[in-house]
Image 1 (cartoon, rainbow, N blue to C red):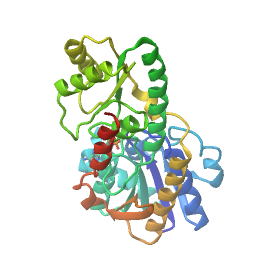
Image 2 (image 1 turned 30 degrees about the vertical axis):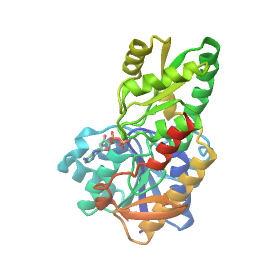
Image 3 (image 1 turned 45 degrees about the vertical axis):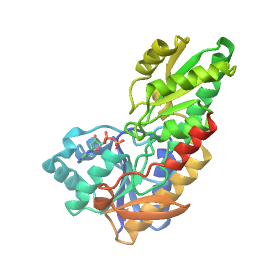
Length: 319
Ligand code: ADP
């Protein structure tokens, strides 16, 4: 393989830039040319393709977002649009493609692979919901953003003896809520993977208050329901002064943490190795700190493993 392409797609995540940098530098190190596709699958079908050099990815390792821009492109689900994308790649002599993104982006890469164009998926999403990897690029940075916010909210919650409901991102997955809730010392964590009983949550709040707790922090994953809905129900049940903070898109921004930069560098470089080995149609990931790769067609039928032990621990530690 002498020419490869790289694109970022779907929701952006901090660490996509170091991943792009790794793809470009690793490829050039092996005398492979790299083409950047700007604006995800949308840029692919409209031919926004430009050769990248070593210097093209200078000074981006510490920046959030993606220098290649990202986009949603619903029409990419259609076969004729996918074929148009392959035509564009072939017109530039590109023989393999690295797709950095989430679940939807992987489905695009799977479709191209099934049409005979080799792709490698690199898990780039803050949600940590991709099968075939224990951690996705951007998750650690998002967690640190969330715990920074929880710590600040805790200060004001304590001063006013208030209950705070903090709604965090994660789409249908509860990983951000679980990990940030544990790291931020939340009293209750509500995630889509586990059922909850609002009466029990209210009882916990009341008994905490009776023991002299000055505040309560409840972290809710967006996949459960709106933080406002939880606050309304709790206020009704407990009559406690309850406030809501929806953290929103700040969770997707910011300079990637060291852990995300290292993960992005390792996964980006591995994706290039796989293409050079002539093995397209894979998805790279990390398990027990070792790089792994799986068939991108098969992996999408699996589910990201939810860490039940961590959830149980969070319950034990927040009594
Ligand atoms: P993410 O990659 O973060 O999960 P999306 O779900 O929005 O984000 O997907 C990103 C893009 O991937 C979509 O806009 C579309 O272009 C492409 N995509 C999503 N699902 C499919 C599919 N089933 N087949 C082909 N392409 C898809």
